[in-house]
Length: 283
Ligand code: NDP
Image 1 (cartoon, rainbow, N blue to C red):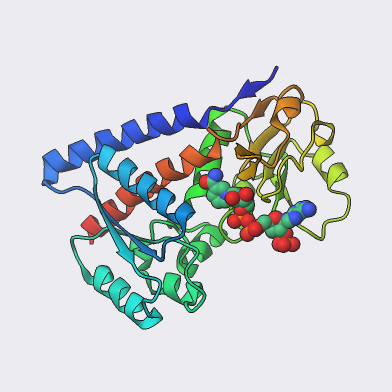
Image 2 (cartoon, rainbow, N blue to C red):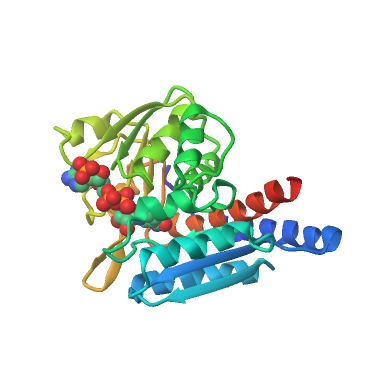
């Protein structure tokens, strides 16, 4: 009964779809979406994430600019750079790679990005739009997770959904999106008592914690859909928050790590960049 939701394959088809849209835009209006990514500092994980984003943009036929800044950059200089990009009609998406150095206030930095160029969907106005059901830009990882859930064809309405983790970038927005689709949503976190019994009631489990294999097969209701967002390194190997090998025999659908949610995040970012471009072109 178990099926693997292959994030790589799904992401590939989304990226091809985005490329087709970009090719049409190029032909019709002679312009393509332009994403600017700002990286402050030299965090190796951040460097590899921004490179992957840049490659994905270029492969989709979009323009991509990576601005790499020294971690001695002042917050004021970063805010001024964002303001310049906000006003630049040739820029359609702005992404500031997190985490930022300690001397910078990440909230202030994100709040400075124009909401209609906020391809990460982290601006408070985009978060507010999500919660009140208005159109806005969705954060990329939660958007990718919803695409994966939709790909199963299973209706979400009335299902018990458990989101483990309540971060602003994954847990809370995923919960809001599930609620919007009429699931009955529970959010678990580090102070939750008896996670196992909540899990066993859930038709859909989204694990976004960052603890290797914390969701074991005996915690999963037979036939549940399991989305594993976690990325953990164990003995040099990437693993998720779910004990995939055992859980796959209990779940109806399950995502692997790697090759699950990760590729969907970048595909969703490309979709967001096209959406920003289209909404700016209408103005
Ligand atoms: P955060 O560290 O911001 O949040 C983790 C959440 O897990 C917190 O809400 C925390 O609770 C909760 N938590 C911690 N311990 C437990 C526990 N024992 N039981 C239940 N809940 C617990 O992480 P993120 O949301 O940023 O990321 C989560 C994971 O997803 C990470 O592994 C990250 O690498 C990965 N990730 C993957 C992405 C992808 O594209 N594949 C994108 C983004 C993240 P509390 O709030 O009480 O502290």
